[in-house]
Amino acid sequence: IRSSASAPSVHNVALRAVSEGQVAAGGVAGIIAGVLQDAEMGDKAGITLVDLGLSDFSVLSPMDRFLQLLSALMTVRADARLAVFGLWVLCHLIYVIYLVYAHFV
Image (cartoon, rainbow, N blue to C red):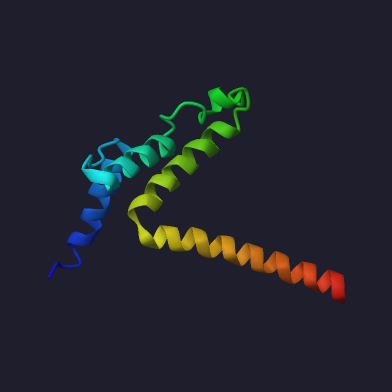
């Protein structure tokens, strides 16, 4: 049984490994992780702001960096995935309720 004190350090090591591009290369899981890692960190061709022609907008650079870090965090933390998905569901639920209310009431 692992102690709860070692859990944050495990997550920090995993997050650091993801952000540095150190992904296990064994089997199908390793191949999938490698492909997703390239896309999450902007290493894949055609997904950077420069490739998309949006590098002139200075506002997008910090947002892009934040989204890359959030994506890397979501690969190693289930609670981060749940929080992002929960926020998405909540926003869409509010929107659908608004549409139903505006249309039928």
